[in-house]
Image (cartoon, rainbow, N blue to C red; front, side):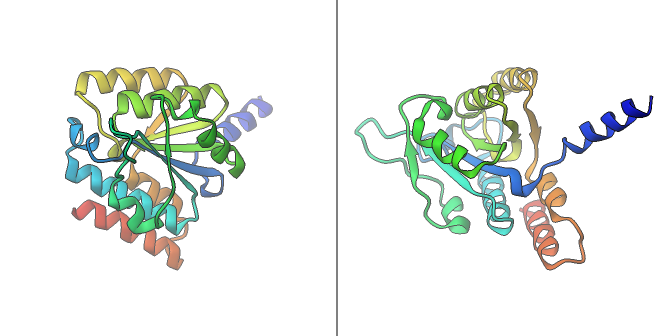
Length: 203
């Protein structure tokens, strides 16, 4: 009986997000795609992406940016909220809906040695769901940052979230992340994290 209790405690501990084991994938947050969001208003989506990028900067969480080239081959024009906090990151242009089918992206993620993946993107049904499924199959702990994502409809997004959940992924909000990663509120970094939380709440 004692061993069972100890095992339960360990499992609960594994449910927490550790910034030192985390990497973020920003997928298809680009002009021509983000405007299609129906489940998360564009202004609110931008606020979520900005806050997530600020948390990544504050806690030294590496980020990967993935996008699709235009029909004329032009590079993706990503949301400025990412670069505003993290500087100009290279955009990995891919030819599939699943970022985990792109060797450059997978190599960049594996090179960090991190196994907790946060995904932000549009659409939840494609750019978010498909890499979530693949990453989950490959042993990553995947969290869909819901307020930094946008779906095409409530119905199809819910179907995507259900499928991802059954694959072992889960959802989280930027506000929860800020509070969870903050730690001791007496520390300066924790106060900055809570500042990001309040900034988002007031937007």
